[in-house]
Length: 254
Image 1 (cartoon, rainbow, N blue to C red):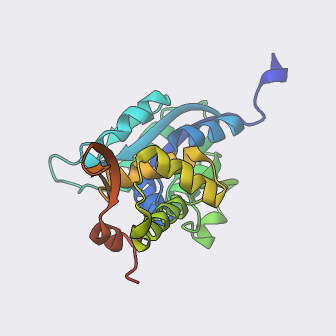
Image 2 (image 1 turned 30 degrees about the vertical axis):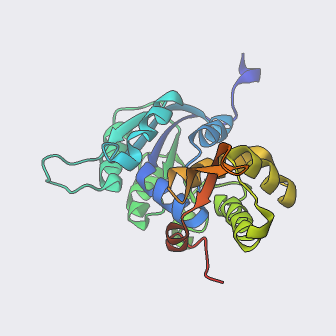
């Protein structure tokens, strides 16, 4: 039986999901990949429990709670209805860490997803007083140098993924070409845009499909009915909202 046991001992993960969601969107134009992160930490450690912290009652995060539960994690709502401590997911997470680690006696490793240096005292306590191994996780380039020194292992996300904004730019560039060449009468549909952009940039169609849907969700792209063949037929095409694209840093005025 020992042949199949992971090299590292049992672990508990505490993830500041509100920070992760905000940071990975601002830096990479992506959504947190909960499934990939779960597979990564589970491949290295025997993860007994996973707690994700955030104000999941907010519209921006409410749907994410389902993905967290699907991965076997627990979505802990940090919304403070009594307004005593403030709506801070890191504060709630810190409370959970102290509470959990004083009752869980068979845990060897603590996985903490945060960039916050205020966790230095928490990490020091876990290492020096409780003898726990510490794994620090965060979005790339957000962990402080001093904080890193306390870690036994470091995991940064995204891994080698291409930032989603790269795919956004490819799609928007395609619309710039269409608008500059109106004489060609190009009608960009959802499927034709995927095929064209993927072929021109030599990237996977699935990546373009996901990015395209996200641009539609953000209302940077929208669907419209247009008539063709001298009014005999109509088709649904995609249109670019230039103002929203400009505000998102995706469309510069020529």
